[in-house]
Length: 409
Image (cartoon, rainbow, N blue to C red; front, side, top):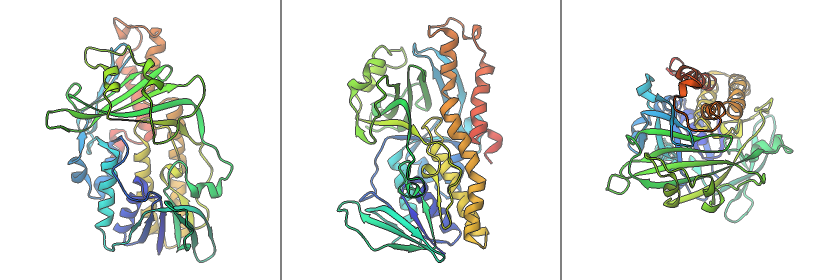
């Protein structure tokens, strides 16, 4: 069996590694002209690390990541709302890592390159369509850099791992649109002395007004003890204009929401002003669909279930997708039945995560507190809501996303 994987991101490369474990031949086709360490930060939750550990990558990732010890929620006045341990510090068998997305990508890429065969990833290939027959799939590519049409690639199966704007998904859902509700984000990285213990994942503010997520992704980046801090600013736009992807962000577009966020433990405006890089992104997803699998073609990762980047769950769900898919392809004699079984196993589970990320992600804790306190500083939070009630909100999201301690084994 020969499988073509369209997209060489996290899902595509992890799928190649999972297929290789089962001795299944595959080839990855990536739109980028070359693989580079691009982007900003990403969090690998314990269920993501379970998948990556099974691929033998935990040590390689630990060498270039930061292990999170706890997660803390604050209101926009810098007051602590709730805290909880994370990863192994919460009793999971796997750690939780904060890592530069580009470093994660390179670890996966080098692992694929180290598998037998030297032509398993081909870059500079933009998918422009496909068709299938009883014997296989013909995938049409053009050179990304020149637009030159290339000879079709023939494979037994095609797996779309080409992200939120998937060209393969568009073949089957040509009229589909991204869902945008007016929320834009800006992502930056700044060199700072460690915040708290240098191992804390921080959320501040509220989805209703302005919110931030902040966590370290590289230790001692300058030899002077500073870390590379990843931060995400999330703002509801009154104009409903949507940000672009991977476009340089302008500080003046969002700075006014945060200019008074100066706390005794962090100067947020200074962190923003001193950023090495700022990129803008829209907060988008797509409505869950009824089918991913169409004969010899199926979808995985963001191509299957684009979700709001809340709860650090997109990468984890993609990694689970591709492991389940590879396992079924190895176990089932009929590969078309394997694709259908994969869809049955994963479609509704991920659809629930998409819906939950819209309505009640982990950030809902701050939203709830803001409503109860009238968006004012509090003297005693227990007068409004207990820590146990906040813990239940967190546990509910973990249940939906499949990473309660008892689920991650």
